[in-house]
Image 1 (cartoon, rainbow, N blue to C red):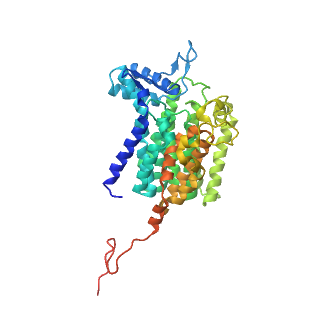
Image 2 (cartoon, one colour):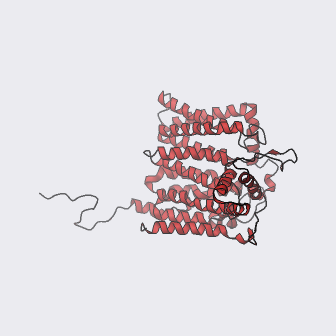
Image 3 (cartoon, helix red, strand yellow):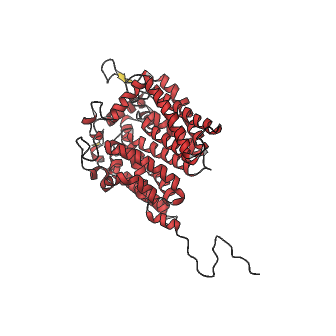
Length: 446
């Protein structure tokens, strides 16, 4: 692919993403005076962001509109709404202009996801694969749905933060020389995820599990150091905020709202990674090979999980999250985005798969294997990590279609990978007889 065509193609993909997400704008901007958002979460995010815009830098934590007149704590972390308020303060001067700006935030974030998607796909398959992944991400129905104009929900930001986390993980595992930039980015994205989505432990749990597995299989101490340092960095930032914020719904240890349990989780990650570093440093039995390192990792992880479930506060805090994932919380069967992707799971399904994923929906079960098969051989380690990420979120997306938004960036990369890239990487370049390679000078004649 010609170098000059890459920025133009990427620009075209970005414009396509914005155009698809702008469809239906006439139902959002009515008569040039009224901004009408879809009913549900988007309207409440607008209320909270508008409150922050009017009373900046104040954040609405206790809302009298909930459980009127006494009010109740808002379960969402404040970062997304605060960022929209801050953006409005910088760019708008009246309430209507702020509402128009807020309605366009989701398409802008949905288009921004194309950048880490392109970077990941280019690393695994080359420039053409990167452009292909960007176009796929621009048009995936699930991703378009969660970032269309007026859909002012934190999920459009979660997809961007999650894609950035995955990019940082791929860089850390794939390139041992590039540690500082992806490590700093991963730490910042840890914090952003904790402060943006109350389900952040799903992302962070999968990310940390993949880092532990990579460190064990590759014998990489540096991955454990990065993991421990970024978890401690997140703990230092988030713990004081949790102390200042009002007690969330579900209690001070609730796993479905930003609470003390998130700080404990970051401390637990640092404990396990630090323990594994100590095991390796002391050369304890079984720490020399991949199998032994995996055993030590599972053992330390099981110890921490057991401790969390033994303590009453953390056990009760984790219970709502487990009931949510298993649809035993009383609302899972009544919420459209929590319906399964396919029939045959014992529950009523929503719309057909092609409306959510297009034809790619039927390929989700084999996506992880396709990633490993199609990636460049020299990027095999990164491909395995991407495959693990795809496997985790694909399983969740099949059970509850809402997680397709989180799978979208990784799926776009995986579907764009081409077996031809792998074959091309293995095929030596042809030379004409009697001509030296431009990369190797010809041997002098004597």
